[in-house]
Length: 337
Image (tube, rainbow, N blue to C red; front, side, top):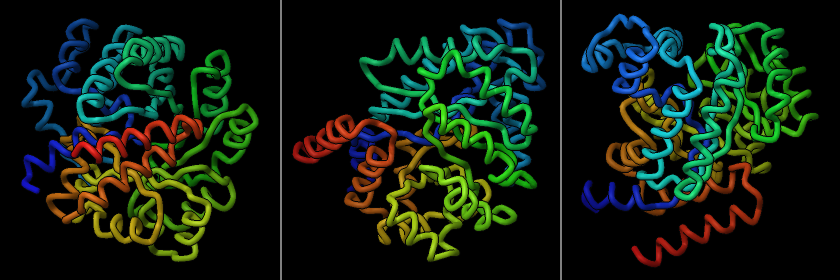
């Protein structure tokens, strides 16, 4: 297929997005709008200046830019607009269902209430449900204290029916999964699904993956492609049908090949990888752009892309009936293609 026809095929292919940080969808245009509305003085004054500031070559340098940008998110309406814009973009790229990460501590730590954050996000999700279904996944910031995570889990209790699962993100260095074992045990007891970031090429990457899978027993891994270094763990995730939510474009900022060859190897080994956009406003692409990068640069075939889309539904936290319905949409789409 030509690049244009490949992109058209990808955009219309029904898919789920399981790894997207809502704060990472804050586009420069909205950032400037919210800064003006909330009286926030940004270091950059134009869209071009904001984009030029997105210079990072590792997780720490990215997070420094990422967290500073959140200062413009202050009111319920801000979080509503943020989620509304993401859901519109995702729907236009064929996302039928999204499990959206949000980072409460990034906001409560600067005086924004948990209620303000989640009410804005939930309002956008409710308004968009005719076009795209979505659920929320609350992440603990691993570079915050264990006590902060405990307080966040407590703050979530009034909204537990509106939060599908819990995750773990932010700076992995000196913050292994076991640091939050107690919190994840409590989250499971409260009925939440579980996932954890195991970012690419970190110190002790494989050890952290082992902790997440063998000790904490998470249901999914976010990123996690360093698992290829331990074939016993690869066999484990394959046997248990544990999904890996990979993000090619964001990988590309720290790894020249985007981990694409590893993704293909894992896919052909029977591991259920799904492709996602991570922080699309910062990494120059939403979900279809990530699929397209694999097709253009690493010759992922139509069949491979379809399998990835199927994996995105089967490793989601939808009900079995909902999964079958969305897989049926893929089948109908392929008949028409």
